[in-house]
Image (cartoon, rainbow, N blue to C red; front, side, top):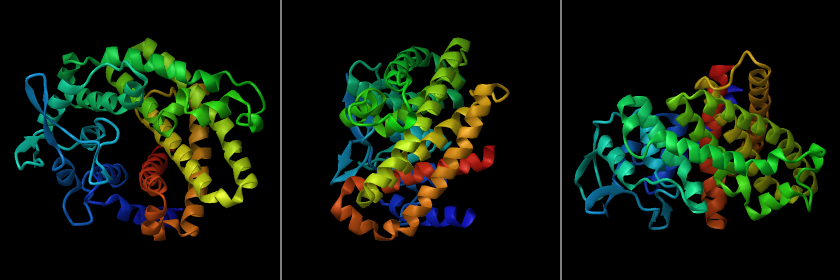
Length: 353
């Protein structure tokens, strides 16, 4: 429903416009486009880059972003800000004032990202690498000659795709009834509770799937695409398992309705965003049975997302964001961040289906 989407957008826009939080502003750009403005009227892109700080990488001066500043998130996911600016097609030659007042272009920020970037080695690296890979894929999309620059995209694809395959095995290996997939004692329940496998990544690993999709679309190697389509199939299976699990949780724990619905919005929103991205990049083979299942899942998950967004709106939670933030910061951040991803997913679904 268009009216509900507009109401949802109006509520989310206010929180995403926080000029003290580049993370929020980047999500605002994801939902509302490159011209999104902070609540103080400045362009979000200008505010974001004003948080860049000079660092050293070897003997070289580079401009990077702190994880947080004065209690507000700046770049909790490494390289998310440059990734967003590239994704929003901000001109590479556009100049911005940094935290010191010194001017830098987006091209300089991308070059500095490349200097600071590295292949993932630890679990922590893999949990942050999605935004790095997405940024490099966007750079190669816009500047094909950048494919030869370090770090090279094919090598990062090999690492990330192998990690995605390994981490989704906890889902792929489940063969019981969908309604029991997350019961106490099940491997999936343990993985979610202990944040293991795909559930150890932010947003259930959806950003890793999106990063791999963008990189594979930029590199275009048949074997990578074949392996990736299998991982999309695992996502469809996750939907079949997680959808009834959330419905059962709501029945058993009605007093936890807000937190459960937030998790539904996170999952359905990121799922629709991920599947529509893969479809828009030509990675879903729409003429095949697998491609048709993806289209069907986009439709069903979009309906679920509309329903849960309406429930959150009707509950008035977006009308009391300040109170929510005082009570639990993470809930506030989920309402903003996941709300923005949900809006982008809904917008893409409307365009593609």
